[in-house]
Image (cartoon, rainbow, N blue to C red):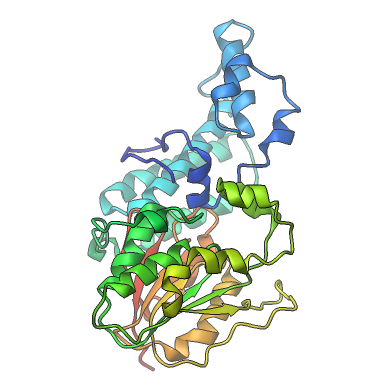
Length: 365
């Protein structure tokens, strides 16, 4: 997971290791081919494998040796400020502290001025920064968030051994959420992968004496995709050489075996126009839902599909809905979805991670 520190303005997290990319859902494993196209630098071997590291390192060497000149007011500096601003956005969404919003907005406006000054009309980059500013300017719920929920929770050694794409801060929160659950209904998790978050929910549930009849419904395609290799260092998974299209359901069952009596597995998918597979469409025929964890995807269509299937079983002022990818850079559509449903999704908990939890409130007609 990313090791972060609270820093102002455009400061970014400490250098990422691969596990940090898992938390932010940013793939870094495709760097080798790109790195091979640039001149290697002897000192770069100790850097994490990224696309930029060899090029930037060589550029710095050229500056030190006088073979190049860095203009702090030039285009190169502008692009670096844009990258740092994206890092600052990611840091902000780990904590959503109101005191940091104003300075971040000013920094993002500065990037937009840079784009204008250099006549760089990249519509996608401009749209990203403009949408980020709009969200920050209209987000008025940050003051009411509980940022301490689950921070003191302890994870068992068996849970920590499960391959994961989720930060420890989020996993602690999931365990706490299930351990302290008092409302009626079951737990639904969309996007279980190898079962780390499922196991944390189950571990918490097993320690909750009031919830002996509650079950966790774990939904996933459980089908391996090539990009998943980027997010794991688990020797057994790498050695298995799982191929794209293979089922990894038996791995999930093995990792979550200690809690199997609490888990109901659903091998299915949220079907949208962009996602059509032979697997059955995700559906819900159970009773009330106490907690729903959404970690399938960050696109609008997937979140709308989730809402259509599950929201009829949400309980007003009781159901907690967690968007695990809320704070990730590509998750603008998740934040937009939550903002558009502001009358029904009331911000509740903010672990120091990408996750954000809301309490469902039935909209008044």
